[in-house]
Image (tube, rainbow over all chains, first blue to last red; front, side):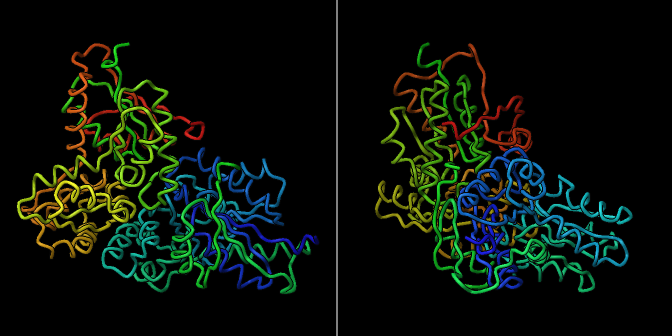
Amino acid sequence: MNLSQKAIGIFDSGVGGLTVVKQVFEKLPFENVIYFGDTARTPYGPRSPEIVRKFSVQDISFLSTQGVKLIVVACNTASAVALDYLKKIFQLPLMGVIVPGSKAAVKATKNGRIGVIGTAGTIRSESYTKAIQKIDKNIKVFSYPCPLFVSLAEESYINKKATYLIAEEYLATLKKKKIDTLVLGCTHYPLLKNVIVKVMGKKITLIDSAEETAIEVKKILERYDLVKTSRFSYSHKYYVSDFPEKFIQIGERFLGERIKVVKKIDINKY
Amino acid sequence: MNLSQKAIGIFDSGVGGLTVVKQVFEKLPFENVIYFGDTARTPYGPRSPEIVRKFSVQDISFLSTQGVKLIVVACNTASAVALDYLKKIFQLPLMGVIVPGSKAAVKATKNGRIGVIGTAGTIRSESYTKAIQKIDKNIKVFSYPCPLFVSLAEESYINKKATYLIAEEYLATLKKKKIDTLVLGCTHYPLLKNVIVKVMGKKITLIDSAEETAIEVKKILERYDLVKTSRFSYSHKYYVSDFPEKFIQIGERFLGERIKVVKKIDINKY
């Protein structure tokens, strides 16, 4: 098979990575996607770097068996704590969501003050700070973990006063830092966009790593002449490690379109 | 070794089961406890019954290798969806938290109207309803899932207005049902006791399955003459599948005392 005909592999700890899939569909309308959501072990955010690396190796091992041309680590936590490690192990082209998000934030900021929110694991790793300051070391980065945002998004507990109060408290420190750009450093957070805008004000530019990642995927495929350019044999596949029914139910909200078939696999075999 | 000298094995999806350990320490002050918290795959509440069964088999297989005289499934979700299945597989005496909690609720209710709150998995299984109505089929049981309570407890997000608002919304339906007894059907919920009392009113009797389970453990050990009656070789062991540091930090709040050593094991070997 022509390499460009192969699918793009995308994985996340659960449904969150579907926000990246959605953007890939928009930017690369002929590409096939094979998605894996590790729903048996979601979330990765509160776990140790060691176990996130171990789980990510299994996730990529599974996707590798599916014949993909590129793999996107769509989970911010895995991108933050495991990507460098994974690149040493696997030959396949791998990319994460931290660098695209960081590049976009650097482009967007006018006053050189960027905020980053994410899971405890992502923020603890300081990956966004390092990636941003690698591009421009004069930029000031202020980061803050928002652990409850993941459950609030997963439970669709969004247009609620409680959610607004939690966001107010989490973002209070960042509000004082005079940032003009805020990176949503977790694939779940775009679902809380309205709440975050309400708290931070409309003047702040929000960076959704999902969109920037899809743009980066497009660039890489173009560079290596690997873009699929026709609708020939167009199909997407979704795999999970647990509870396909729930994945469909929550996932359609993240993806913004219907998910027809989701297959369950035993991730411990990989 | 004399069988009564052996430890009691207790497992949970994470730290929550330490509320059971705490009660065992109070009711059975000479017993040794070997605890396993599956922190690499916590929480079990939102997962499918199949995967909760699979994980529980591994958890018990590990504890079995540690020479225990009895195993307590301290996780409500695992007790609800896996206990019958586990009893068929393992020879060791096994007990869960649903039946003790149900017995206590039946004893406590005066008007025959009991409320139950728990994870999505526990409530969906209707295990409490079945266990309560097996004792007295005339009792009316009203149950309601409170999925965000687990993250709120884990993140210590407790004395907050947002938490109170979430509790108000979750418990609104139950408040109308004229219940006089409410089962806290998740090991995390005792941490939110104050919030729940504030919403439900002081007249409602709260049933903490943890305490009732410890009472039941004592009864079983007494019946089979297996109570450890001296402080000879007194020691407890804690094992987790990920992040021992975090387990200590959060766990001490659940246990109400210091945890000195926690060992990490690879649960996929069992």
